[in-house]
Length: 420
Image (cartoon, rainbow, N blue to C red; front, side):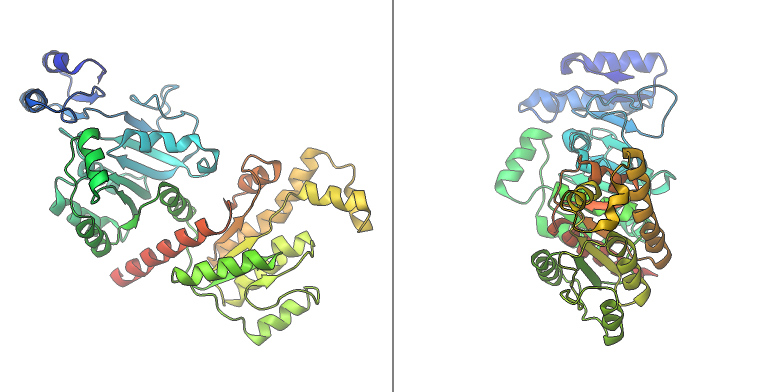
């Protein structure tokens, strides 16, 4: 049963549900613990007593409900969550959140739609089912392989510690904790009535249990996307492949600031690169192809050489431009005659060509366990961006986001290795 009624009549509805044998309720209604005054505690205590009497488990109040992206018995995958678009990509990432908005509105951005969602649980004020219950559920859920948490307070800290220690060696947990600042604590008090704790304590708990902590929603999603892809680096060494020196330098600088390693390539690897790249290119790490636009080399040959060398654990590739744009430019200016044969290609034929450029590298990435991050300055809804995403590429706007997210993923991998 889903209840969306004024708070004062909720206790009576609970009794009626109990009399009818209902034992599961989604309580959307607000006006309980998040409001001031004595009545807030009276109402919460009353519905808890009724729930205990009838053996009812309920989620809420003041929540946006639950969402199961793998449930296909009806057209609407939610028990009740009108804020989530029901046609999201299915995946292995599940969220439990003390903010209904965070658990739902983040999926409105097309940049986030590459991250496949499994389930979303909005717990609200946690009068009955809390975020620790959700964590325990996700622990054994076969459709959940990566867990995301938005936390304002933990009522059962010891149980959280116990579960997190058990879960993180098998399933990564990514957490946003909002609290510790005066402004944040005031906002939480009016939002769900939570009393947040010292952020230093939460940070220590997360570090001890291997929980990946972030303060930013976009980074939260970027980390989840990288891990959900299931191709994780074996170490911190990254290779940088660009067609412009500036982005390569900024990727390298940011990577080292965040604890990643940008190794100097061996002489043998540099000699191999010299047989392929023009004399104007930079052969060390980062590799600067300048404006050489031999796309098969850029998309297939160079990434494979780096993966096969064993000298890098991940690759960042900047300068991914629209094949159609490049092709048209060549044709218009008649720079390279060999491209003329593609002048009359249809959109479908260009799609097939894009697939030929991307699929071999995706296969090599899995084979060598070296993830590749494509950085694309164009819109995520541009034709070429869509082609990249359609072929399984991990696509990001600009270079700081994947670098920052990968650094935290590597910290988690180190923690996991120590537990083995």
